[in-house]
Length: 169
Ligand SMILES: Cc1cc2nc3c(=O)[nH]c(=O)nc-3n(C[C@H](O)[C@H](O)[C@H](O)COP(=O)(O)O)c2cc1C
Image (cartoon, rainbow, N blue to C red; front, side, top):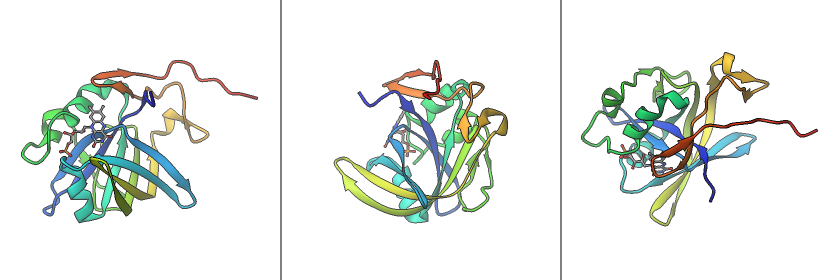
């Protein structure tokens, strides 16, 4: 019942600097001063190991036309597969962290791991956002505008996009 919600691509790197990408929709802002986010990651996945080791990760916002890449990133593990290649994704160096961003995405958050705790079958990770930027054409007053086709996850392999935005006076 807490969906639809935005789905992101979390990028992490292994000890040799090889990037991995996963789909994540259990992610939320939790603080503005300093800016922090929290995300819940399944302990059987690979990404949480990489984040705990490197203590850095990037959050990349895909647009709806990237849904196939999102499903690939979200349906197999990067332990033995290079999902970036399969999904046709490429990376670009970040500004503040050693983990790269995903070039095709429309927004990026560069994060430093602050803390994590066990919650059920997942670990909840809190990251400080060291840099945040997005395609300027798709933003108005720091918010996605109607040109940004943000991808929302409904559940399973069902997705939607935001329909109508309105301002309350
Ligand atoms: C739309 C979507 C959203 C997902 N959200 C999450 C999530 O919030 N947390 C999580 O641990 N896994 C989530 N998953 C599943 C992971 O992306 C999946 O287990 C992936 O294979 C993990 O990759 P890794 O082992 O390379 O880290 C999601 C999958 C999809 C398709």
